[in-house]
Length: 431
Ligand SMILES: Cc1cc2nc3c(=O)[nH]c(=O)nc-3n(C[C@H](O)[C@H](O)[C@H](O)COP(=O)(O)OP(=O)(O)OC[C@H]3O[C@@H](n4cnc5c(N)ncnc54)[C@H](O)[C@@H]3O)c2cc1C
Image (tube, rainbow, N blue to C red; front, top):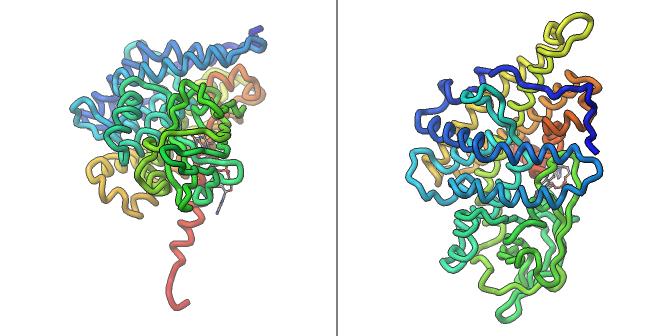
């Protein structure tokens, strides 16, 4: 059964918003524009169909959709990998655009969508698919690129980057969310093996992943990271299942159980687990910021079109200031954050070493907090603009209306860092 109410037409996005037309405005340089334009063309030609099927499946009330979605998501990452869009951690093609900027431009577009100048219509994005790309292509690949030895790179990194295999990064546990230093999962070293015991929660791609970078506590009490080959999810004593979330419909957020799982010791990364996790943080923060900005753009396109089309009290909604003002303000804020994002990613690409400085880390964190909050605000304003219709799945599905609600905290401990950041300003001697 299709849950759609026939009286409600699909919201069609009727026109471009020049403020967000990155191919034609001054923010990006010519090389970045070429990269983005190629990605736009690829998304329109090869990815949009899958994104539409994923959306359509959400309207089936009785048909089991998970298996169908699983197949689409797995193939989607392969298609991204064909052109180097899954992970930018290893650049196989010479390109004048840095890897972090590329990663952010892909995230922005895949999450939010864009107005196609080829076909004069909006190509809708999907934040949850982008979350899967981030988990496999960045959270898994970047630490391996940083510390994997030759054997580990050849076996567990290159095939993921090149062929788009599903991968995941498993940090969060039931008791330990924001406070990752307290990870409890045990990695017990025995001769040539490591025996894993414990549980992980909220792991994006977890139940689809061929490879999982699993963080746990070693015998010496330190945190380590080990690559788990799930043998296509058939690994002995390993279980994975889905955690149902509001929004983020296609991210396959999972619960993992390791009950005496034996992993070859050669899969252990020679690095401190905390160093592995923190090493990638700047890039992760900026890519999530890009996703959030993409989501703002999507919500603003929908708000604008609904306000242009819907009429009440004999006026189109956009005649009312209370509808118009938040849209205009959110467009302005989104643009400011977009230019900050591109400047940070370029800076990190140019100076990868100083990028690890505390100042850049805290600016990236600040951007992530602001962008996630703005995405949340754009959703609230879209909800308000749409009135009762916003509460129907019919429209939620089309817009990923609840995605930003997931990210406001689940994207990773915003307020912990914000709290620490605010304390820094008041750290003075002799008071
Ligand atoms: C859609 C989604 C996908 C995810 N994907 C992954 C994944 O792929 N891999 C993975 O390992 N994890 C993943 N996570 C988990 C995510 O990293 C955690 O949800 C996050 O770290 C927050 O932990 P928590 O949910 O336990 O919240 P808690 O740690 O319980 O925090 C609850 C609230 O309190 C705030 N808070 C906590 N401590 C402090 C403090 N000291 N000061 C101020 N405020 C504080 C937090 O910011 C948050 O708002 C995902 C989560 C979601 C929702």
